[in-house]
Amino acid sequence: MIRQSTAIVIFLFSAIFFLSCTNSDDYIFNENDATPIFVSAYMTSAFDPSESQVKADTISPADSIIFVANVSPSKSIRTKKYYWTIDGDFMASEFSFRGSVDSPGRHEVVFVLIDYFGDTLSDTLHLWVQSPPIINSTNVIPANQSNGMPTHGGVHFAWTAYDPDSTYELLYRFTLKKTSSSNSEEVIVDTTLNTSYFSYWGSLDMFTQYTWQVNIKNEMYTNTEELFSNKFYTGGSSKESALMGSVKGHTLDLQAFEDSLLYIVQIQDSLNNVVASDSGKEICKKYFKYRFSPIKPGTYTLQISSPSHPEYAPFKQRINLAPNEVLDISETELVDSIAPSIKFIGASTTDTILFADTLYFEVQDNGHPISGNFLEVGINGKPTDLYSTSNDTLMVFLPKSKVIQLLSIKVKDLASNKSARTFIVEAKHDE
Image 1 (cartoon, rainbow, N blue to C red):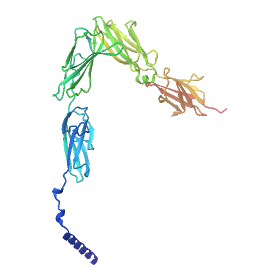
Image 2 (spheres, rainbow, N blue to C red; image 1 turned 135 degrees about the horizontal axis):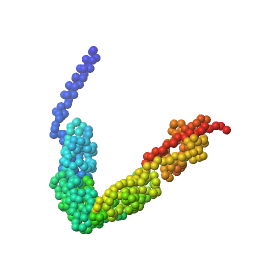
Image 3 (cartoon, helix red, strand yellow; image 1 turned 135 degrees about the vertical axis):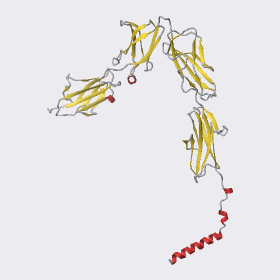
Image 4 (cartoon, rainbow, N blue to C red; image 1 turned 60 degrees about the vertical axis):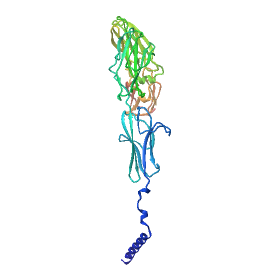
């Protein structure tokens, strides 16, 4: 108890001595000695001091903009964190960065800095992203797929469009293209208008597909989000019609074939007589286009086949051609409807075969090799990888067994047609 009291007395004496030797007025906080901290934010188009720096701006959705934050007197002050927000949502955690804002309308961009003491400093920018022009795709003339359009005397085009911002003048780029018999497009008109209508007074070919397009932009060079495009077909005499369309094979099959498929397109009358016929291969393994003009109006059967690939079932469709009409069948896809075949290569003609170390099977999809990814082999109900393939030949390496074994083979083609067979392999007896 005596030692503890002595220590307390010494501590108090020391404190009194320290206060008596120190000028406490020197440690009173003086706000004149404090260094204020400020933050400021601005937008610019380039990391160049000569570029204009703004607190508010109007941009297009595709514009790139640079956001810059300054801290005074220096960015090296002790901070907890700093970040940008847009309309209250997190945007970035950098002092300066390049970005874009795609959502149309007014946006509030804020730079926030929280210092070491937990004080929050911020600066706000105002950004207006203009909306792209909008076209009413249903309120247009001529309507999509219009038929029997005149070849002389003029064709009139009209559309309605507006700018949601309502302050900008709209400009319209109008194009008119003709699809030729060789499937290429020829530009007939390409012009810029300040009115939402156009009349073409030149002559057009009979029974031909034309495409007209409108791309709209405002004076800030903001374009519509999608190019507007419609088709129409010219007519001919009242005693004539036309037919057009395209055909392709199964998409996965096309990727596997080395050459483009050959197609034959026929139009047959009610007595199965061929009225018109066309043949050709796909363009870049995509599709083959056909066109028949002129044809006498009436009811016909359209038949499409690929003679070099019999796995494709012929396509048949009943069609009715009205006078002065172009009927567009659009795109037809031939369907592979024949499953692969599985056949044992050997003397046996039944599902019972003699044991051998290697058994050979012919697995065909009308002459096309079967991929190992579409093949399953099992022994006694369990999958096995004791096999290999070479073109259309499957080789199974069978383990020796003194009892009967069940060998199962499953295969599917690129069109997901499936085949399966199970073979009984007789027991292997020692000689």
